[in-house]
Amino acid sequence: MRPYETMIVFDATVDAQAIQTSLDRALDTVRANGGSVGNLDRWGKRPLAYEIRKRKEGYYVVVEFAGTASTVDELHRILTLSDEVLRFKILRRNERAGRTTAVSA
Image 1 (cartoon, rainbow, N blue to C red):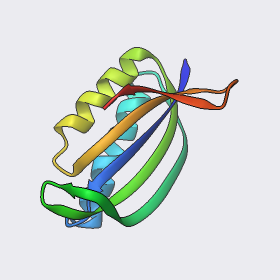
Image 2 (image 1 turned 180 degrees about the vertical axis):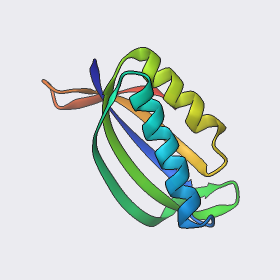
Image 3 (image 1 turned 90 degrees about the vertical axis):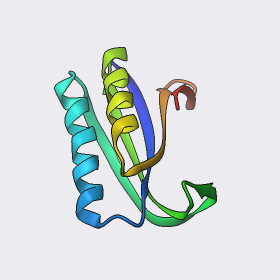
Image 4 (image 1 turned 45 degrees about the vertical axis):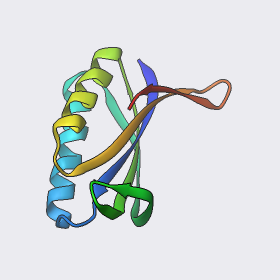
């Protein structure tokens, strides 16, 4: 299993329960596909650099996890289908060099 990191930007106009449900679904997807969830960092509401779907603000969450390529593929599918997610980025972490590599958008 390789280490990954994903930043998820949720629609800040939806209620907190819907954001939590969508986040739980993503974390359960990682676990169900043989991965393990590490650090979960909630940044909260922040202004977006540019409008996305006519939204100026998003709720940011950064999740570190370990998994296989199939884990990443399934997480990508789940996040793409979620209506609460405005944007996300999954990065593979290179622990030795301290760098990250983009996997998908």
